[in-house]
Length: 115
Image (cartoon, rainbow, N blue to C red; front, side, top):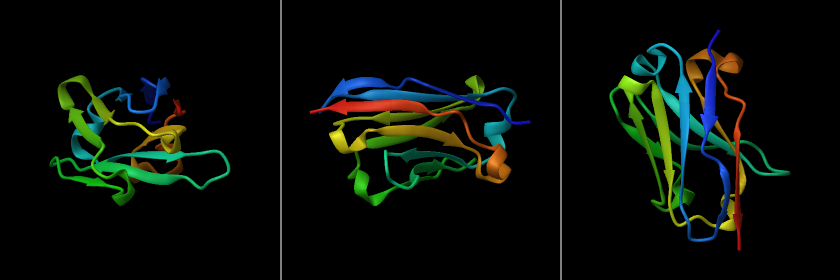
């Protein structure tokens, strides 16, 4: 059973920054694609960013370069650095291991950006 634990969410003013963390026990991130998704109220869950085991990254086009995904294999942690936050970034952010399907999701962390 995969356990992903997200942290780092909170309330921030527009223009501010937050860094989300996703921790998984063991070395499971080392050889897997890891993604961050988000779901805003009344909207579908959408992909924010992904990072491969080799370090290649993918970002949603709408982010305009404001977010950065990274990984620290020694700490079994994947990060999402979010800068210049906007109210429309308000959502629950989820860490995921696509390889594990429905079992590869964390519980989510709330990010709220005030205007």
